[in-house]
Each structure stands twice: as C-alpha cells, then as structure tokens.
Length: 358
Image 1 (cartoon, rainbow, N blue to C red):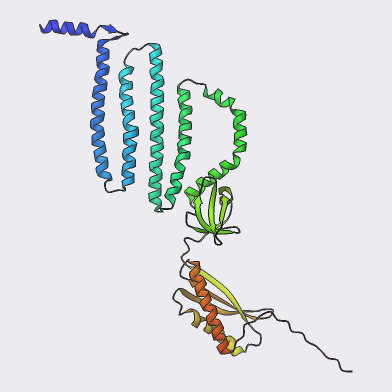
Image 2 (image 1 turned 90 degrees about the horizontal axis):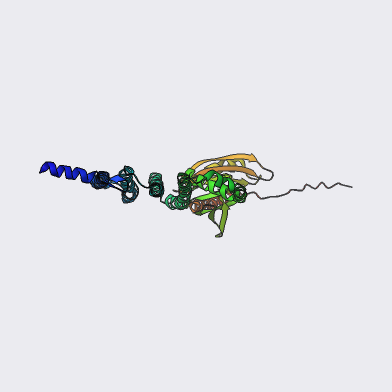
C-alpha cells in the first residue's frame, strides 16, 4: 500500500502543466509559504527589539525608523521571496518578460521609497544634532526637492532596465536641455546657494544680520530668496546667490558688544580739568551693572577740540541695552562736566584781526 501511494504521488508530481511539473509548482508554493512565515517572524522580532531599543530616544526617530523598515525593507523581502519562487519555473516568454517588467517596476518603486525615507531620517538626525529648532523647518523644505531628484534618477534606471534606449532619449533632448539649463542658470545658482546656507549655516531663522547696506532679522529662508525684516519694518528680499557671495555680519552669537566712542572738550580747558576727565568717565561707567569699563584716555589734539577716547563692553548682544547704557553715560557726562566747569567742544573758527595804526 505505501509503495502504491508513493508511486501515485511520484506520478502526480511528475505530471507537466504549462511547461512545469507539479513538483516545481509545489516547490515554488513551499518557498513562498516558508518565506512568508520566516519574514513575519523575523519582522516581529526585529521590530519589537528596535522599538524597545528606541524607547529611550526621540519619538520622531522611533517612528521614522519603524516606517523605513515597514515600508521599504519588508516589501523588498516579500518581493525577493516571490522572485526566487517564480524564477524556478519555466514560463512563457511573454509572461516571463511581463514578470521581469513587474519585478523591475516594483523593485524600483520600493528602492526609491527606501532611499527617500533614509534621507528624511538622516535630515531628522541632522536637525537633532544641530540642536536648533529653527533649522528643522528649513530641512523639511529640502524634502520635496530631494524626492523629485531621487524619483527622476530612479525613473531613468527603470527605463534602462526595461531596455529603453535612455542615451538616445537624453541625446534627443540635448538642444532643449541646453536651452532649459541656460534659462534656469540663475535659479540653479540660487538653489546651490540655498544648500550652502542650509548645511554651512552662516545664519539661521531669527538671526540679526548685516549684508552690505542691508540690516535685518532673518524671517524666511527659501529655495531662491531669503527674507529679512529691517529695523524700520519693511521686508527685504535678497537672492541666495547674493547672500553667499557677500560678507555677512551675524550678531546672534555675539556675547558682548565692545563700544568705542570719542568726545571733545574745548582748548580753553585747564590742565587740571583735563587730568580729571578720565577718572570722571570711569566713575560714571563703572557703577552701571550691564557694562564693564575698559579705559578712557586723552587721545589727540583735534582741529577745534581736545579729544578723548572711551572704551567699554556691554555684557549683552541686545542693541536696546547698549543704547540705554550709552544714553545714561551721555546724560551723566553732561551733568558732571557742567558741575566741573568743563565745556564740550563744537566746531568754531577764530579770526584774528590786526588793526593797523595810521
């Protein structure tokens, strides 16, 4: 009985259907079932361990990494199982070519999604490492451009795998491509400048900067232009190329502000008064908590004044705090000089008249 069953089973498995034995179909089916089981087990184990490992990290990182595995790596494993199983079968040439096209399209789509997800994950890590909340919106604005570039490259590879003559297609677009490149030259320069601003970070959102004759706070960093809000309130729109080609003064990281100012007194001021002036200035500046006195010296003989140079440091980058301190110093200087009988110099002209006697 067992021998007869074995013979019947052998005869059944050796029967051919559409160019393949039943045994070949059973092997392909077994590969698919076994592969699906293994993938599910491995996926559950790997995902559970990754989730456990990432519980101590940022939630956005956890979700992003899980999405990369679930939406990219696992579909590639499924695709590989079916490819291995069906590749062992002898198929009709038309069906074989059709499946090759399906494999190419499916693999390309999954691979593109995987690459885009990895780049997005890398941008998230870069934003966290930068430890700056202002840079994340800028990095997010990069994603659409990156996605377009990756899909374009993937589409070219797909056409090449489907035996399309990509070289001839690109060559046929040569003249049009040159015209488009020339027309978009300025836009491409701004785009590369945008990448330079994002990754080199000469300034960020909220920074107070000076670019040539323009002064303002950075409100928006776009692919083509950057917008500043000037001190007088209007919006300044500057191309990214102009920004990266200019000298930029960024006051965000300035911890102290060094102030140098001059004042002049009249030539009629007595020597005793001139000697007192540095000490008077020091006595005025030192009690102010927000600033640190450096020095005060009789600097030079001017055209109509005796000039002093005063240096102090404001212990803050706040411009309003500096102006408050300077105003307090100026008012106190006026008050003390009046008390000491010292006069500030102002442009004067002395005319000497020599009367000739007759």
